[in-house]
Length: 80
Image (tube, rainbow, N blue to C red; front, side, top):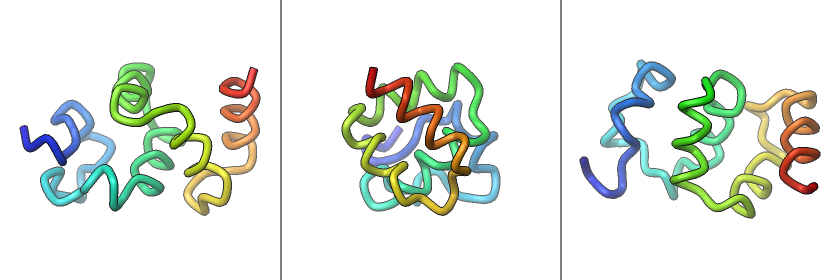
């Protein structure tokens, strides 16, 4: 695996993309939004291995790919 690519186990969430072309730094908002909205527990575990909690909180603030209810849930969970 390319160290700058997503783990293959996340492929079902990003089926329409080449995982080697999704850069975790450049596409952080999109990746975090997709996993937060559609991911399973295993996917969320991968998310927290890839990103620090502060980055996740920053990227969900104004992310158009995340519903307000999901934003509120994660903000409450991660800020307590």
